[in-house]
Image 1 (cartoon, rainbow, N blue to C red):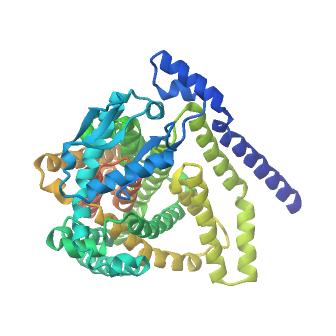
Image 2: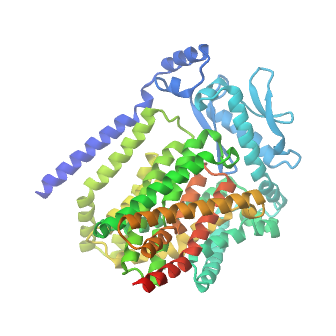
Image 3: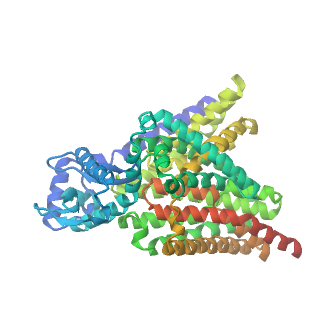
Length: 589
């Protein structure tokens, strides 16, 4: 019987892989001749919309220009240069501006070149000229595309140039800059020490340590150290793409492990037992905030967007941010208040779990739309969606096989080997969804949900992983997130007002929807309000989603800062408001 089941699962996996290979090959089924004919026909008719051409043809080659290790600009090939060669040329031109204090990026504008092509220029210095292939890649006319690039580059280079210029001032102290491994070790040590110190301060003040860890990054970042001692700041955290990528890679391990631990908190039986109140708070508390967040995304001015071309992806992303809660922080607050066994505490945690699952699935969809390196034709979107379905199907079909593997390792080896296999499964799962274009979020969270159900996995096995994650990877992740935070949002009156309004809208949406959902489940006024307040704790998940949105290129530094400030404030007010609401519950009982 076991052999038959294994053969059945193996056959299902092979069929799924064949289907995935088939759908992966869809975009490659077009020929260059088809593309050339379709392009000529479209241009002759005055059409430059990518979806009109790519639906039946092969997209032009493209390559990314990485700007400051943070932003990306997609370029196509030309008759004289490949896409990669052109990207390298434009990249060098942008580097020249970033390192030259005589070149003011605020002067970037659009000019028609001698060939008649709209070009992005800084005074007489040509940064990039638009081409016909570029218009096919973006689905815009050349003049529209040039204006888009001009505004985008002006914003991004203006933001990045001070860091490059400060970095050049300490170029004579180049020992650390030449030894990337030494600098990475020093960065991790400094971030961990600062995260520890600030985390202990927050604990003493009755706040979650994650707020202190983020504060550590803020103190070490451009908002504080960058202003007080810019040379020291740029010596330790240089504006160097390769060095930034090294620290980012370590930080992403924190994301993967944190999402796995969050997934392990998921208990479907526990949620089902709560019935109507949990269902109402969970469904209403995720769908309504999502709709409100998406609406805010469509209403925000263009200045808050990295690119107006990504308005839909940005709105979907903002709705996703509005919909999540933070299970680890919610659970910790409930335990400290001795509410985890109370019906209000159980329903709050159940709703927060559903919100996080809903958010992770949505974020995987956002990752598809936010991928600037691909044109999102229906075939491409279907391919990625089917890839996600196949991944979840394979994961579900492999459930018993994974459980049997873990049981075998437990019986034949030791706890260290079992923990190692859990980490291997986690990393492969995260890598699979990242490869499929669904981001590491879905893979990490899904594997956490699966591992939590394995009979071989006990608290004794997970505890070391939790300790390492919460004492090393998570502090590095949150502190590194603080390095990108721009507190100028608190000094600029317009941005400060936007931050306050954003915070108010989030609180009204989340608390209000949780309250209505619990009332729908026949709970009292104060119980419903407590549940709404509890789920309005964005904490770690809010920070994770902010950083992921930033890494996707969906957020400007100002918008990123607004979301991080919102996550901090909602976490800070959760405990005192919950205490107030629970006192009212006791008074009415």
